[in-house]
Image (tube, rainbow, N blue to C red; front, side, top):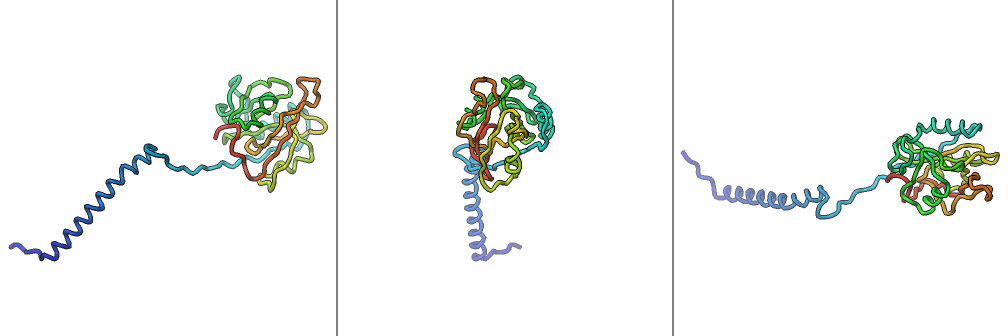
Length: 221
């Protein structure tokens, strides 16, 4: 025995079906654009950048021979000698260290070059040492005076400080330190302490920033 569906029920069912089809068509028309955006085609998708926190400066409080201080700092930072004779910082393995001539370091920092050319063996007696930590960040190694030790180590500095980083130790700068490259602002080239000697120790005068990092830094982004 067949039942007759009231006209009002058929009308409601038809409206529901039409609404469902309309929603389906709208969804399908939006789907290709969503897939295209997910693939990166047909327009740019906005990606929020995540700024990696800069490492804190590292200082060896004791004094001693240059070779021993360098060994202590390398052990503290967990870095080993580069395997390649020359390489870019961005291509260097994490947990490694290399050297750069002061004039090339100065040019890279003054111009905010995106990368540094490192050598396994110091190209000169006054070369600066660079450490690439396990997280890929870079530290510039040099020697500082006792008065700067307490100022460079805090990870959250309320303001910039002016520091003099020497390539080699002296009575004026007996403590070895490693400062984060991402927080350095340099506006002048390194200066030789003895202008008559090509391989004389050099001094790099620069700003060590507070909590704000500059955007263009040597090393991988």
